[in-house]
Length: 324
View 1: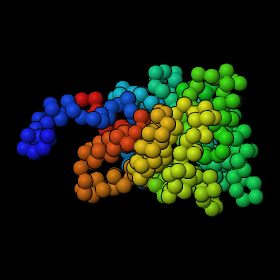
View 2: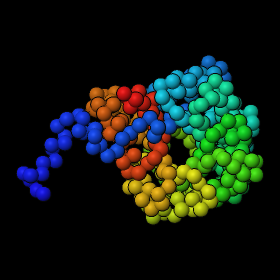
View 3: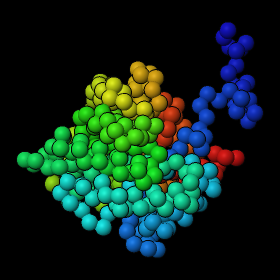
View 4: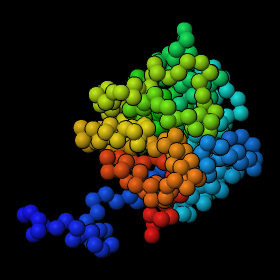
């Protein structure tokens, strides 16, 4: 049928009909809130480039997790800022590490909050790269052993899921092997499968104190120009045992999210990263945009592209509105 018999506006005149036929619905179930834990007591270090976010000591992090859980947040992704660092990131494998301590404390006070542990070394190495350096570059296979040990330690201390973000070849298989050998066969892996060497990570590097001290991460993170390569990365991670595959960043890579979902029909996560968040906050602070509307539009677009899970610093800002 054509106009005038068909008038598509008929279903747009009422809130009720618009809600009835809405194709993509963003809910609290879709969202994960990233958090940063640091040493000390009663420590709150605001992150200047990420308004509303702070590095929190364990005691304050527990209170923040309780607040988030009470408002409807069901899952958080934890990053750690350790007291000391080393050349290999071995401090991340210690049961008394900062994230391990945080997870034990959170599980004691907020036992039903789902804890996802980021698995990487950049926050824990003196040089800021994601693994052991040999001849000026990250040694892939040596780094796998650190990642495997870190994963086991974090699950032992409360992680419900591990999320390797390092982009080393073979790390999903090695982590799966280590978890299974330790008896953690039920623990899922959410792999940062297509993680791009992106300029959108700038604010995060302030938050996690993880900027590389030399060079860049282009030898292990992906070229932003490539999408076929992303499918190869995802396929390898699925074969190695990934339960969820991730695309990072999200907003500039909606096409990649869609290709991954269409090609593999796997649970797909997308990380709405710090730079994407901070640009919205800066524009809102200048009165240039309606922050609530644009955040919901951005997150809906990520879900519409195919993401089942959205990791976003906007979570705490929008989740109350989604519950209404």
